[in-house]
Length: 128
Image (cartoon, rainbow, N blue to C red; front, side, top):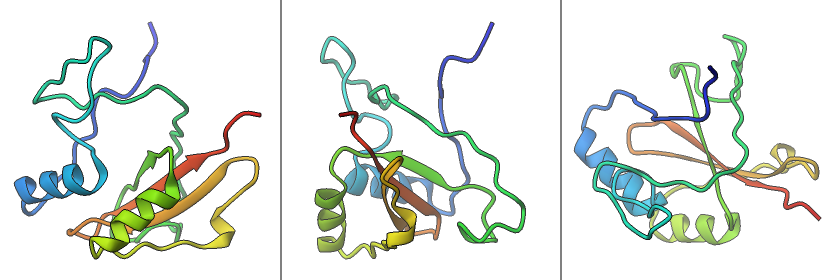
């Protein structure tokens, strides 16, 4: 038997209800978001679209995300520019660096949730 995909991502929060709302409102992420193949939603599930996912341990002294955090979530997006514009309009600081982008991998941006967790937004390169 092998693992076939992510089943959930669980993390601690000072105010879980507020943070859950922030993710839903700003990113469309979390319980009740998306629909299954029959167009049905579920208040407990987030239906995602299939695609690539990176699972990669980083060196303990990496500076790629804050050193006081053990992990960083990366969300795959379909229109990075539109999402970044919407986040900025809502007062969310959006960080971009040309060095993060790669013609082979895609484009990236970074935001932080209200509790300081880094969130990487990734628009993969579309196949030709």
